Length: 298
Image 1 (cartoon, rainbow, N blue to C red):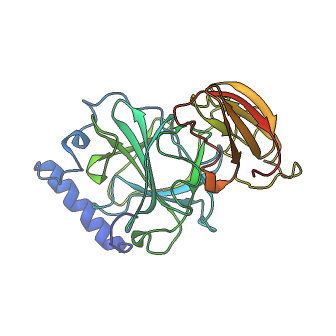
Image 2: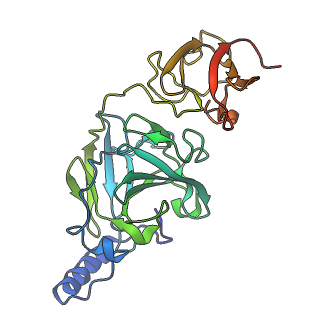
């Protein structure tokens, strides 16, 4: 939840809805963010946004009051406990911002091209725990977990989610939000709620195209899956033995410690772990020539 309002009494919700209807009739409705957000008819086609959750899982969605709508607060079906549930990207795109805000807590924004963005609030982990700014993601990329960070979460675990439009720039705010669509269905309106909505975020993962000049580690042996988070060299751990990709597609198998050789001479050791940025290893302008696996870095 992105506002400081508490949960609204049903009678107040009904009154708010009535006022909104009267305002729309007389053309006095409040602006829903930017001028671009006021109408979606003139905007470029939306990406095929899906729910930011695993395929087939079910969720409850709420818009709450006029200050919160068209954003959604989302919890697991029946909310048996949503804290820690994985959050994925709603569509392919590039992470445009990862930051901590007093109200929204651990926050991520993703740019999906043509001015379209999504925003994810109150994540459990630090916003760069799974992804980094500038990283390419798709529907199979985990970006975080449902949490309750930030004062506006009111200390209950949920995902505050927004779809936004801004024609220029790589950073958006709540003035840019527009009605949310999942799988082509619109979920918007003051005081609305939807229960047991199934996620259709079922895209098949493709091998990750590691950016040139980086070594990237992934949990799947085929170079797909979530970014592996372990600092162990034990092949018995699920994400210890895997395949890495460097310079856009050259595969190497190994464990957690990589000695990267450069065409310009010299090498550098990467001890894979969360503190090193999920294994994305910038070459500093040098060309990565080879990757050799070994034990602990000296």
